[in-house]
Amino acid sequence: MKYLKKFNEKLNLKDRTELLDFCETTLAYLIDERFSIDCTFTNVRDGVIKIDLEKVDGFNQRSSFLWDDVKDYYIPFLQLLNNRYDIIPYGNRTKNNVCFDTFFHEAYFSVEDVIADRVKDFNGDEFGHKDKTHCISVKVKEKK
Image (cartoon, rainbow, N blue to C red; front, side, top):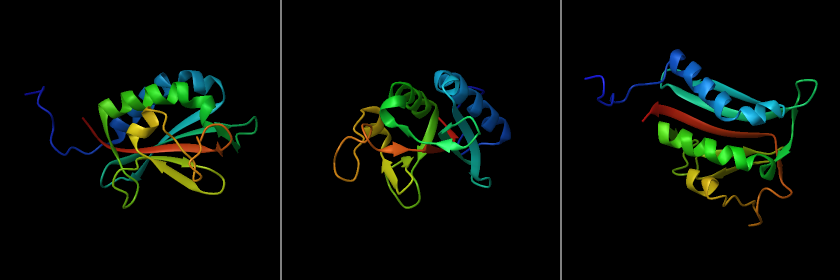
């Protein structure tokens, strides 16, 4: 019975700790480069956890970074995360599950587009070359 998939089981504090450990282990190189990972419940009742990747400066203030600087580490992380957890959309969006938060707007992309590095800005240009972001976020709800 222990190998049966649990139906509709919500994430709890123990799962949050496990998830944070997974994120920190998988993104260890970025953490060494002054990035931080935060896993917080956005909806405790439903068990939704938001995972934020941010860069901090020497004063623990958020600073901006380019997609090109993190994509070689974030894409494999997102693939592993997608294999282990149900990544859910933001708000009423049906497919856009990854949020790039710039200082001026938020851009949303599907997991598949981010993994394939098809991340475009509002002008249709590649997102990583000039657009700085200060946070990349995903939300997970259940283990697969």
